[in-house]
Length: 130
Image 1 (cartoon, rainbow, N blue to C red):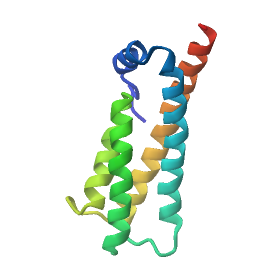
Image 2: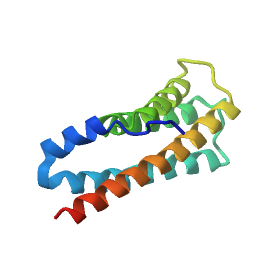
Image 3: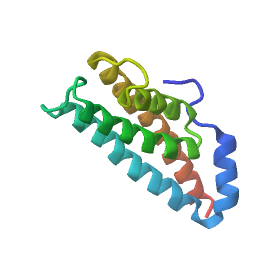
Image 4: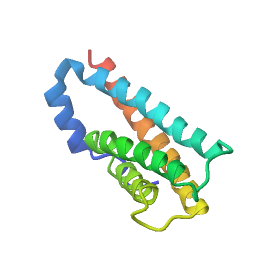
């Protein structure tokens, strides 16, 4: 878990740009990201998943790439960095082994729980102000 899981300057900018749609953006991010983290976790639990299978790693790398973009756009910088590391391992850009992959997915899941809690509080704050 990072000390600064979310860049609040990014959230402030999004709040200003999105205006009334900002709470909807938060809801979509929370919902979509929960599914993404669950999908990564389920992939690792699949008995056919192996780090020696290129297809398995590529699939995980694509999942991480997509999640990296959305987390970066939302200011979840450390989560985005973890996704980049997983993407690089999944795409074979860096050497990866099963323990490293599983550790990264666990770190991504844990960091997402922190980020999700922050965004849920932000959503509550939005509803309290309207």
